[in-house]
Image (cartoon, rainbow, N blue to C red; front, side, top):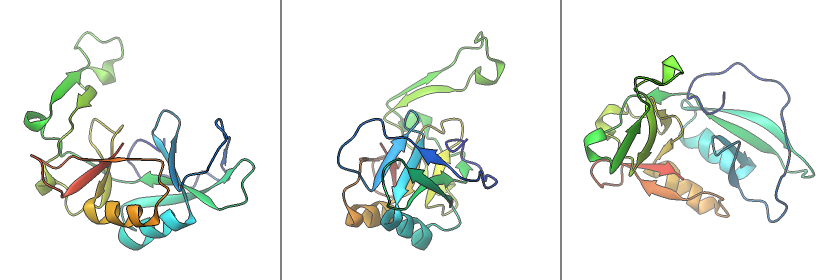
Length: 167
């Protein structure tokens, strides 16, 4: 539910288990890279720059006294620029799951049209909510926090710096 790009009710107490021990990062993904988990410093970035675009839910990380949060991007925006994407794969019309028919299976070289984002600073693209998009301003602030467990890829069409997707 945290990767769907919609406003959510408070889920109550959440616990995250650590699969791979090692140095904790300030920003990481859980559950097939769809659930962003962040520390307090990164949460401050989202609160300061994108308070209307995200929900932050406290999460207890096993064996760690530090405060962590799940980031829920509460907006989904129809902004994919298919013509500028390197490769677009869709589910077939014969897919056994009716709601997937014609939907994006995967996009390589994702590109968005920034003119369609309505000023959002954090969101997920409609029909491809696997991607978490952040503005250049959010990206720069996150990089200043440091020790991120994520990378960024420019996704603004054609190759400008207006939006950066987390990878």
